Image (cartoon, rainbow, N blue to C red; front, side):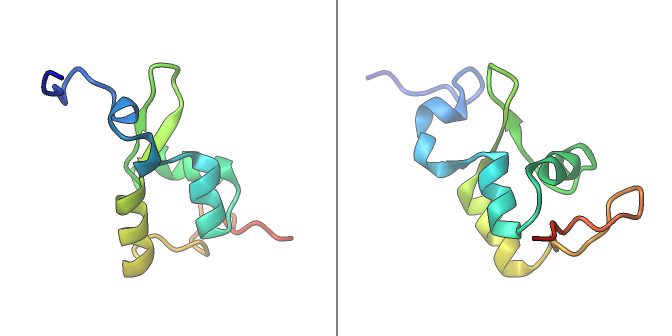
Amino acid sequence: MPPVNPYTESPARRDPDSLLTPGEVASLYRVDPKTVTRWVKAGRLSAFKTPGGHHRFFKDYIYKLLKAGEVKADDRDDDGESLVVNG
């Protein structure tokens, strides 16, 4: 098998088990998936887009942030509304 070129090969094709969807990240932070998407747009989380336009997150990156407490679920969005999902 030829070596993978990281600039042309999708990370999802290299190891799909190392990736999380916005819904999975939302479950970890106990927020709505739309909140996770807003965090990406605001630059608070790093993600890449699949060829279909869906955000994906590297699992080790998300768990590192969770452990460090760098992104908190009780933070507020740009409108001042709580990002925590009640329920």
